[in-house]
Image (tube, rainbow, N blue to C red; front, side, top):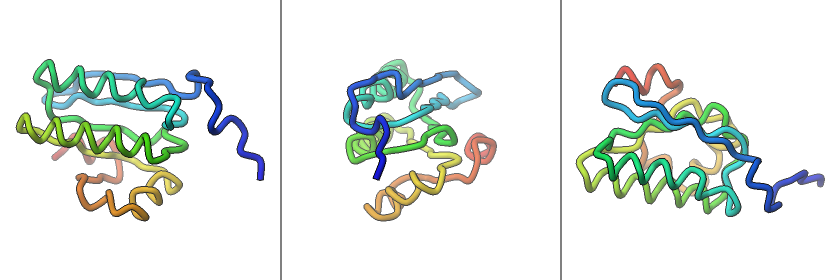
Length: 122
């Protein structure tokens, strides 16, 4: 099985865009979220909560891979956001990423939306 660059130390495999839209901080990771790239997502999520933006919407439509480390980043952000009175909404997950949440049961602790638009409408 050709795993390509999965597991390599190439941090260029994940790019994260952040923008504020209404009351939501929209964070869009694009690429592979794993042990090597997790901090690239963790940092903007934590920064948003520290700055009082506690309604986090993670647009997962560009997320091609997520391992347990990536899942833990999202779970940690959820705990911090909820402690501050907010929450984490996941939007537009590709089937390969949704499967990780389904297998681990993590989908039960997040608010999951089919699209970014649906997440922003709630």
